[in-house]
Image 1 (cartoon, one colour):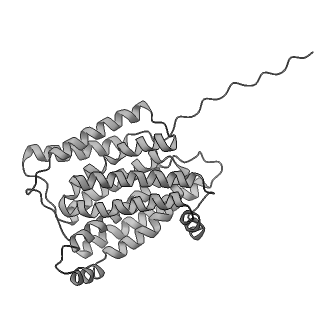
Image 2: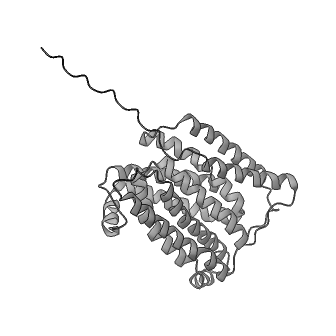
Length: 301
């Protein structure tokens, strides 16, 4: 629990710092990845945000070694609360009344997931068949890259309404979902006795290569999307897709069983479903600004 909450804090802080750094940079695009990397790597604030995300990754490894995937995703979703608060404080992104009600519902969902946990009774999967992992991850990566490219092509159409960022969030969320499964796989391989055996086991698995792909493409795609959209909008959409992908496909792939007690099972399923449902029903775009009154013509002499 402590590691999960720490990961939430680090991830939220990292996204907000990166967003604040990106707002001060020239426009970046996935069509020029070298320029994007050169701009962000020369910004100290962005580097601080990326270090916070890296520390969150380390905390996530600890979580996946001790908690089932479905329970971990229910807790990770609670990071939205801190993200919205930091976005309002550091980025000036205002939250509506509907968004504040959603945050309260997510806190309730977190409480339900926490109450469903019981030490020593939950199954924590350590590994999954490699063909099954590739069967799940490779089409998901292709779908995420294709969806992002489609959103980019539509955004370049000058006659199209400005994008809300939902498509970007779904695309990046698919990549991060694959990354989350790879992190789970790495955490399981680290239980091997001996450092040498663990390293050889990792290199023989698909997990480090999936992490490399999602790290490179996820970095470029997420930074371009984060610069164009509200952090308090695109990150919740991305988190929803990542959590749903990881909780469903990860639980099946790693063979983790849900609680057998009816009450704990109901709390686990209902809490995760509530968190995902709230995120899916959150506003997908900002309210349109009210038109300013027309200027009065000067009176004739």
